[in-house]
Image 1: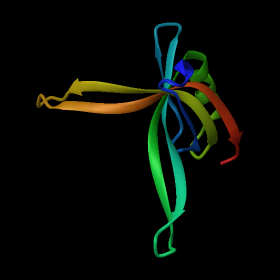
Image 2: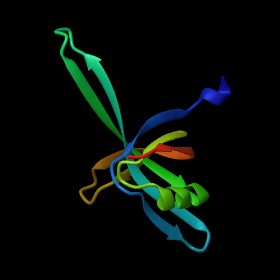
Image 3: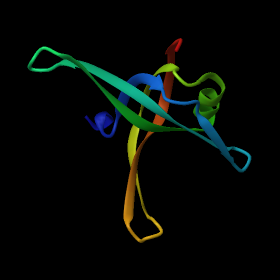
Image 4: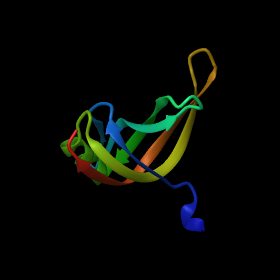
Length: 111
């Protein structure tokens, strides 16, 4: 069961092209958002859709691949782990953001 700790798998479409940044000679990070959609029916039988947006980051070689091949609307599958960052804004209020650090990325087809 230890392999199941903090592991997430998602399939969805990119909301925008990845943004890549470089740190020094050999550190690269790409960030982008992924939309996942769930369709369900209400008690009244009405079809509804729920879209969730996920913030993703890729490092080094995976970042290069994402930057080179992915664009807005790309259909992908990812596997990774969830991380939460904490910081204080200029007013001293604690803020949080949750991201998924991608360990594997698979391109599934067109937009």
